[in-house]
Length: 114
Image 1 (tube, rainbow, N blue to C red):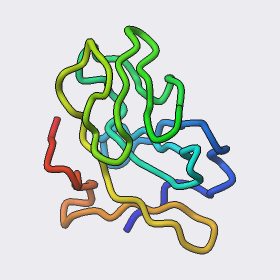
Image 2: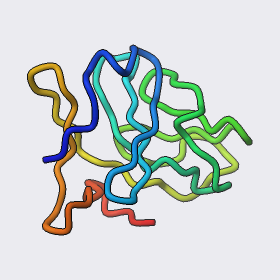
Image 3: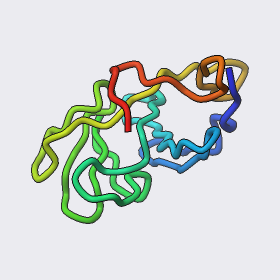
Image 4: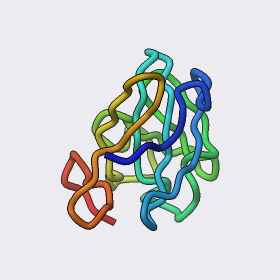
């Protein structure tokens, strides 16, 4: 497990960017009050998803408006057609953690790699 930040660092309905062993992660505090982690790059245009808008359990790319389901990484709105990697998140003692593999890097829970 690797600590990303404190829960209070990610206000509800927002996303922040974090570098985890060279992998850019968008850490999102969903409107359902849960935390999600997705690869911080739109699968349609290589821009940071962490700069987009959170709505429900989706994150919208600010450039062309593609939306991604934070639970599955699947696009829910065009022009994106490819999913983004999603990562499991653990919250404990007021901190947010991501599980990592033997190489110290987070492993996608949806099997999508970039």
